[in-house]
Length: 317
Image (cartoon, rainbow, N blue to C red):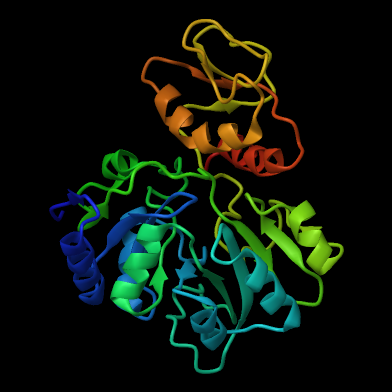
């Protein structure tokens, strides 16, 4: 166990966080999607510490966060498609999976031994400042124990990883609240491996038709495990109301009784996405038998929300 300190994002805190990462230790930091558990992406030892802290299966790859497009282009093989997508959506909540360059310095452990690499340029100003201060790529999955609910506030990180991360940079709540869209452009046909705030409808004008991975697909990117993003309590989807002992999570006009919370009373999918993980944590209470969740429309950002909910409700190992 190590001492975990939560620091406000001052210049001194950023300098200390950068020095901690350079020393091979772990730092949690906010992005616009969720908080990431960061380690030096070029250090096999630092990447191994990420896996250890999260108790994460080693076959599940990590995303490498970089400062800008130029740095990304030095790490991966970006064809015309990938460059056009990067130029439109970076910085932002999109991860691109491309082929590794021959001399790519990113640890093979971060890629789970694959010949592809997952890269993202985050838009959150604190993440951008940290990347500039470190001057090297940061591997960063969500800052929570593997398979559990992703953190959207610093206190969520502390609750799950206290004693396993040196510094948590507290940048307040995350604006998007769902992990980045993961788009695989390593093959001939573009494929959404994990839906997110950058939707199929937004990508189609640049790429044409896209395929979508399912839970039986080979794991080539983060967030593809069948059981993932799960609270301790079992989750029941498309519920109209709570059964005895369950707590209810509504959406729009759907409402519940005792223990009810609402993702968005107005049916706003953006609000629902930003509140999803925080409310799953709030309802994950001792003494309850489960969490019942109202139907979410399978359109736009609802595709990503339902993806997370299906994985949260999947059979546990």
